[in-house]
Length: 187
Ligand code: HEC
Image 1 (cartoon, helix red, strand yellow):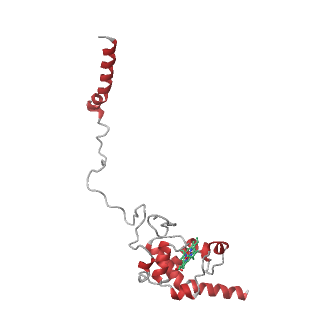
Image 2 (tube, helix red, strand yellow):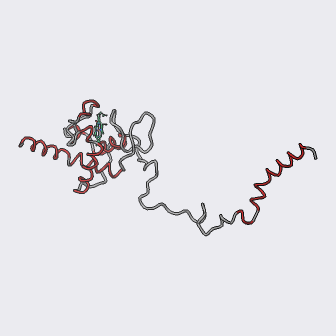
Image 3 (spheres, helix red, strand yellow):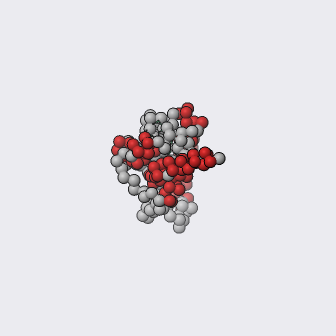
């Protein structure tokens, strides 16, 4: 056997070694445990209220499609309370705590007041829902499951949360703004 043969025999043995090692009975016994293996048995159902990572898709494409939607969430104290909390987190920075467009950001971005007739009377509840979902000309989206090209925003608010915000904008905000104005005058 010359040196070259020895080298190639060694290489061949090396190449075969993993296969040989795998074949020993004790090579696999760590795998044979009573634990459930991947893909074994029927797939388990997702726990209740699980949300896919990309969010729950909204079955509408734009505000035109949402503008005539009926609000499925009745106006109640609980809904107004939740809407108010979410409004203060997601909307107040631009539109003001009571929707009066009076924050330092308002002017810079051109956010409009939400208490005047335009929003309170002209815009439908479905349109406000669509504005929160898809954003507006400048306003970012708060319910866009996947980022589409040219779209800013996120999927921060669930469908139900958006309707709570709509309830608050349409049925709580103007009243609260009037109350806070009266309070300011009394002082
Ligand atoms: C980053 C700033 C910003 C935030 C936060 C914001 N908005 Fe706006 N919003 C705007 C601006 C700017 C406009 C006016 C220009 C436009 O239509 O984009 C507007 C317009 C609107 C309109 C009128 C839409 C129309 O058709 O004329 C509604 C209703 C509204 N916002 C509601 C909300 C609600 C509810 C939230 C909270 C979920 C919110 N906005 C959060 C900036 C913001």
